Image: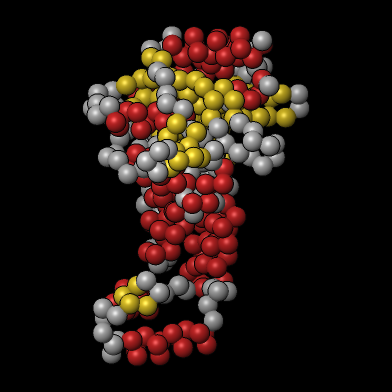
Length: 352
């Protein structure tokens, strides 16, 4: 009963900020989920086939359902929407468990990203205020800063820049990539020489010939890039150190521009962060701590720039209450046209 009353209170708070309630289809085509999350995610889905052989699944996430609804409605006007309901996902910790009562709110199709980002955070802070939690922290990060940093590191081969950006969200594998970058431990000189001999031999063959699903031309082009743009242990070690140092940056939000600019200047990286870079209004909540965290939100893959989370203190520990950010790339990852999108979700499991 307590959870239901709090849920209704949160929904009223979101509605008061001008968001319109929408209903979302509980069933999605499985392909949309797998396009974003990959085949490995299939084991978490409650999936089935319809009479025409099309694979469907119960929605594992309400954000994807909302974005698909917006795209399929073919609207080009700004929408402020909110929704609530259940997201169904196997966890393998409890038999056929579900994520209950997810509440989300989004701004879709707008042109003023800075204003929208600030509005989503303001709506989240209003929910926080009405929730009754005494101690809280708002963490803000930005994936664009990380991507810019990687692009500016001239000594990293292009293929490795793309790899680091792609696996930023997989922290374990990302750390393995950094280790390989700084040590070249995965490169065996004997195998390199063997590959070069194969390379020279293959150049004499028909470029259209196929092996392991690739043409000889594709394989030769790829190997040629590696030859002309090799990894170097000395510069790789330096670049890895810069990346690690950046991801450790955590500071009060008002100090973030100065600290970031000092970091970029020290490492001769041409990036400047302005005072208005972070989408925040005035903080009048004395119990709310606001900080910048370069590594914030790395567990959620689809964000493209601003990321934030609000953690609240329950007993002696801080737990996630609200999380969100900007995900303009989500629609293209699902196979649709690009749409401006920013939103957040409330973790109602805290009240269970």
